[in-house]
Image: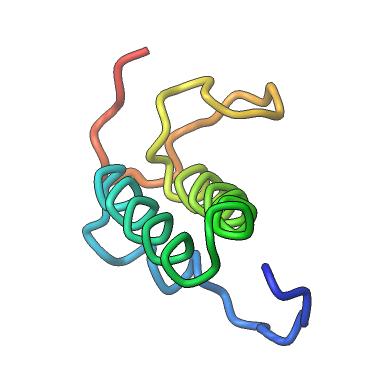
Amino acid sequence: MALGTRSYHGNPLAMHLPLPINSGHFQQWLALWQQTTRDVLGEDLGNHMLDYAKRIARGMQMGMDLLPRGHNTLGIPVFNARPDQPEQAD
């Protein structure tokens, strides 16, 4: 995505849904991504890459129903897509 090649045609959401992932995993992933991209690419380009990663993380969390209710950018109510997960407090 970040390189604009459009060559990946997998389904990362489907691959991650069965795993015991929570929001903390996304925070850790973003922190590692931020540090790595800044170390390798420098602060400006690293921040640009971090923006892509944040969008991916947000989309994955929305798809996995890991965000608090009503916490999406589209203004569309989010209902529990994973019945095995307990209801989240508003």
